[in-house]
Amino acid sequence: MLSTMQDAPLSIATLLRYGSTVHGGAEVVTWTDFGAQRRSYAEIGRRCAALAHALRGLGVTGDQRVATFMWNNAEHLEAYLAVPSMGAVLHTLNIRLFPEQLVHVANRAEDHVIIVDPTLIPLLAPQLPQLTSVKHVIVTGDTTAGLEAPEGVQVHAYEALIADQPTEFHWPEIDERSAAAMCYTSGTTGDPKGVVYSHRSIWLHSMSVCMTDGMALRQGDNALAIVPQFHAMSWGLPYAAFMVGASLLMPDRFLQPEPLVRMIAEARPNFAAAVPTIWQGILHHLENHADDVSSMKTVVVGGSAVPPALMHALEEQHGITVLHAWGMTETSPLASVAHPPSSATGEEAWRYRYTQGRFPAGVEARLVDDTGAVVPSDGTSVGELEVRGPWIAGAYYGVDAPEKFDDGWLRTGDVGKITPDGFLTITDRSKDIVKSGGEWISSVELENLVMAHPDVLEAAVIGIPDPKWDERPLVAVVIRDGSDVTPTQLKEFMVGRVAGWQLPENWVRIAEVPKTSVGKFDKKRLRTQFYDGELCVEHV
Ligand code: AMP
Image (cartoon, rainbow, N blue to C red; front, side):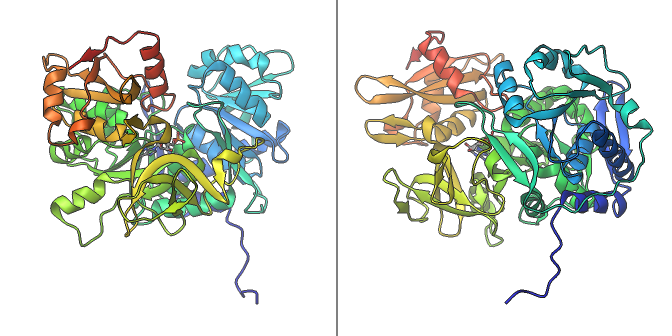
């Protein structure tokens, strides 16, 4: 029997229409060299219509890919909304990819148009001659900033292009399963792989972001979107903000602790989202500067495991509640959030909050062992996490990757355990686990312990070969300036907090942990540095 309900498609155009009318007074504020540049959602709606007309004029008449090579800003938000709403596909290019990876993904996606910020032209221009499908480059702002395009490519200035266009657009009705946006994985292992989101998956994901037990984003919030729009769709914040009328604060290229803190003091956001390394930097900065961050109430932190010491410091020193979340480009990305059960208080609540959280109804999860057998979610059994659901990727764009899927489930490559009441703890990426004497050591657990020491700024653990145990952990540690703490003392600090055989005896002091294109610890580079003999290892 069919239902009697209307079959209205879940589309980005409905979000655009709703946000720009009902919440037309909400704002996107972009940080610039000259301070805050404000634009209301009503204005964004009109500019999206103008952009869509302009893109039609450039031959975007179907599902052509319109790529962005941009920081987080109002124009990027306009592309997020206008491109899918007109039936085309938004492709967010990661500005930090290696040149050959950038060429690979833009050609694979067959990008027809690229919208670029003027400050990023030096990164894009040298690659343009190799981008075989690109016909138009649109430079945001009033001028083309001197960009000289190769033959066959036309360059336009964004403002001039949209200036005389109509400010209303007849957004077409679109099958909710069709492609809305695509984003390539960050490519720390192998070539980046394309994930294509549908209108439906983005809609359902946005609802999950806004749910009270999701990120609880709501009307009246002022959300600082630090997580890049080129990485996992800025964790869904742009679409979620239009769904509920939350305002957005966009940091553009000002991503260092000093301007971020100034932005918080002046624009007074109450919500933010970023990877742990950003918060470590902000925390460190605040130790020596008395900036006012009192507006900030909740920050969603994920992308890599959040050290408990960081959660405590933000909460106890600055009154900022950290919501720990887990996800991947392939999971839209929000897939679990650590809200403790309402019955838990005090230490017990903290223990829940340290985990990667609970899955919402839209994400099913299971753990699988080396033989492919499902292991119980009993809070102790460990296995590779597999997930499925309406906003989880079921394939990659244009490539077969059978090893990434298991009978309809996405293999995440993350290893962990799940409690009977559904809380996930990630102990490692499967490739980062240290295998010592046949037993597993969680690199994340060791990192969290070392980073709990007040004189430690960052710590990353990798496995290195050992003649007796096969592998032993090596701790690469960044010690606070002016501290004379030694690896021996750090090891002593860990005694009693981890099994004796797991205590690391290999240490190296470094100035900074290398980071990936999206700000996570780059253990691949750390391993290369070790094998190239660049690390001066101390045995303690
Ligand atoms: P990406 O696709 O670049 O967003 O990377 C996804 C990967 O980041 C996941 O598979 C995890 O390995 C890691 N990750 C994301 N969130 C967390 C978290 N809260 N704790 C530990 N690892 C995480």
